[in-house]
Length: 317
Ligand code: A2R
Image 1: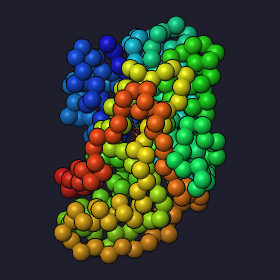
Image 2: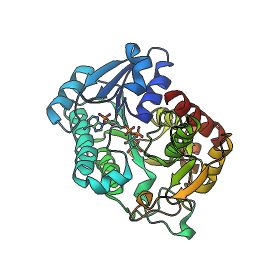
Image 3: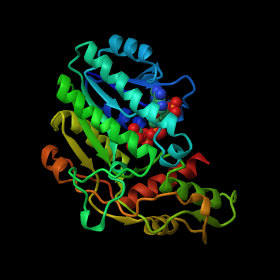
Image 4: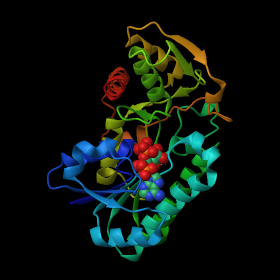
C-alpha cells in the first residue's frame, strides 16, 4: 500500500509518518518544499520517499500524484497557524485552498481510487455559543479568522468533490492537538519552550502569556494521527468527523500543569502582543460520531502529552 502525506515535515505529518511506517507493507511518500526544514523527520528520512513539490503548483502536484498513484493521501499541508493568517491572508487562502484543489483535481483527472483524508479544523466553528457546547458536526460555521475561512473552504471542497465526482474524501475536523515537535507558536508548546529556556538559564524566570481564560479541547498528536488512519479505514467518504477528546481544558490549567513539571519558580506575565484580535473563547467538541464509526478513543493522558512536550524542548534547547 502506498500512502502519501502532504506536509510530512510538519508537526502532524512527522508523527503520522512514524505511525504508518509501523504498518506492514506500507510505503510512505511525503511532500515537502525545497525550503522545508526537515528536523522533524530526519530520524526517519531513510525510510520514506521525500518529494519536493509545492502544492500550489498544479503541474508539479499532478506530475507527482501521477507518478506515485497513492492508495491513501493524508492531506496535511497548510499554512496552519491562525495568527499568521491575519498577517498573510492571501498566502493562507492560496496555500490551503488551491493546494487542496490541485490534489483533488489530479486524483479526479487520473481517475484514481485514492482515499483522501483532509485535515479540517475546529476553528471552522469559530464563534460558538455556550449552549452549543459540546460542538457537533452539525454546528453552524462562524469562522473568525482567514485560517478558519480557508478550512471551511477545504471542508466544502471535500464535500463537493465527493458529491460531484465520487472522490473518496473523509473530512476530519481536528480540535487542538499537541505533543512533541509542536511548533513553538502554539500555546502549549510556547509555554513548554519558555520553561525549558528558563531551566537552562536562557530566559529570566518569567513566562509570557496571552489569553489564559480560553477553553480548549486537547488531544495528543499521536492519538490524532491514529484517528486520521482510522478515518481512511473505517469512516464514510463524504462525511465529516470531529476528532477531539470531548473535554475542555482552561489554558491557565494547561500552564499550571506545565509549571508543576518544572522545579523552577516562575512568574507569569501577560504579553498584550500574544492576544488575538478575535479569539474563540470556548471550543469543546463532541466526538461521538467518529468514536461510534471507528472505535477510536483518545488513549494518552494530557499530563503525559505535556510532559513529553516539555522533555522535547529540554532536549532541543
Ligand atoms: O512550510 P514547510 O515548507 O515546512 O511545509 C509545510 C507544508 N506546506 C506545504 N507543502 C507543500 N506545498 C505547499 N504550498 C505548502 N505549504 C505548507 O505543510 C509544513 O511542513 C506542513 C504543515 O505543517 P505544520 O505547519 O507543522 O502543521 P501541522 O500542525 O502539522 O498541521 C497539519 C494539518 C494542517 O492542515 C493544519 O491546518 C491542520 O492539520 O490543523
